[in-house]
Image 1 (tube, rainbow, N blue to C red):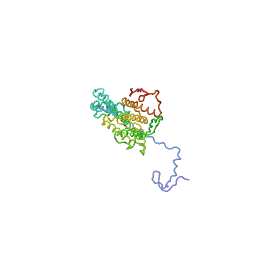
Image 2: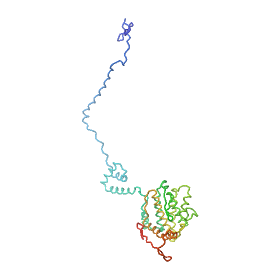
Image 3: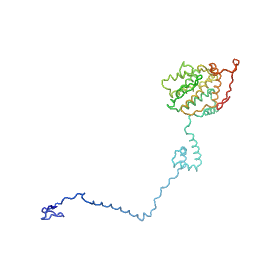
Image 4: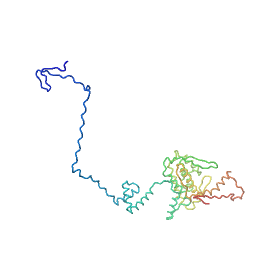
Length: 370
């Protein structure tokens, strides 16, 4: 079979018709897959070479660097001394200031003063200040300008210890106020304890300090007919609160302490002998204030131990007064124990009204003495 069919007047290869020649129909073309070798891709054109620089360009020097900025003036560097002392300058400013301090004596002296002042601005590491600090400040102030109405010497320990405890409490959050605290004491021969919270301890101090308020004719925090037994008053205060005691107890306790100190300061000297009842016994008002200062310190120590915070003892002069009160109460305490059969009798019989035994007590330390 022929590959083409001729028709009359078919065109030639160049497209012009040829007379007497039939038209030619081409045969079927082969597929692209039938070729053995594919045509190679055309090579990429080579990059054109960079034009050579003109002779004039070859002779030009490299561009010059930007001129350095002038150093800061004296006034600018002096204004940066405060920021430098606080370490708030950038690295460039710090270098400029320190280079200037080696050349300018007035600025160097000012920088030293500012650095010393910055040292006083650091946060306090201890909330409980030195016990002697308050006494020294008051003594210095009163030495220059005596108080028109001075605080009695027997009320000063109470005033100081309540202020120290209040300083410990001022930064407490809700979690610290609800920290468990275990109070410990002795009843006859048995050791007794009671679990409460930091707020509960302050409530206990508030109710027992109320005994002094009642003796001075002030308002009792528990109201009328609350009794004079310290333990019963505390239990009544705790039971009267439907919810656990919170930080709200701090304000009435502190306000009552200020009122007590202010009242005895205006009352005069004779008020120290006023009797304060403690249930089964009573104390003169001067000794009652010392007893309350001693208990405030002991319970402040309990609170500090519960929240894991250091707490220093009272100053030597105040501690000496507290120890003196405890020593003066020893004969009464021993007599009560003897009547209850809890103390051994004297070895030798003596005349009625004369001491059967003598005790020499010597205390060492900051509050020591004989």
